[in-house]
Image (cartoon, rainbow, N blue to C red; front, side, top):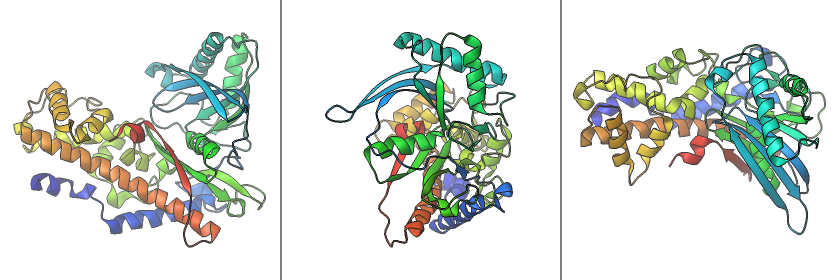
Length: 403
């Protein structure tokens, strides 16, 4: 489809470019780990104070909160040791309305505490003081496991009065204020770290956690001797790279397109998380929509028809991109979705739109492959081996839903 290719050539990244992105990210990792360069580094390389992977012998009854992805979840996890390892899990998904995500921090944590109360009621454990793990998928500074100072909101969240504060303190305050139950928040972990640990529970070789969902990020086990910001040189610690911010200092300008810039301008956090905006699920549908609008305006699609729906932010969702890319029913899906947007697509239009979706999601996958490659090279060099054997734990809505 030559007319599209001429148009989207900037989104097709050559192997040479991808290797260059990999080298750039490796440099960013080094900067983030260094005492001198960390303050100005875009990629923060945050120490998590998680010093080992589970060995599968862990047991107990726990509550887990998961805030920051596609939805807010609360889980009860029972890990027992009879015969073979059994993990019993019950979970509940809670809605977090936009006015709470964009309102005051107090309201947000009151909401979390209320949902937790509801969950404990349902589980009939309000009188128990179960240990709570808090998966909080935003960049946090930690000096210990049970503290997390929010550096900046990302993705869909922008609650006031939380940046610079300890989210464990805020949640404890909200729970105390209610007074109908007690909770012991033992740890704040990034979702990447949770993913690495979950995988590590079953596979001792897992030392990387990767998220490709609403946002994107990765963590890995780094040698303490390379971590300037934490005292001690013995053993390893998990580092939350916060790679979504890769490029925030201008290091990816040469590969960002006009569409990436437009996405950024319309986002809750302009100038921030520029790599994430090229990769993750929160933005992929919108990227495709912006491309379709421009192509329609230039008469390359829908005979130049542009509808109010097509011009509406968020109308073309990432799940639509995934549906359109399915090999068998993708074209029918394209027709259905485009028809709902009112553009009366021809068969050619459907093929073209499928092509656009493929290019955008391929670029996303290639970019993640590059940054992941940099982490794998770091692990290999740390171990001083020619070939690395490792496991990557991967999670996230985009990773799970995309064909």
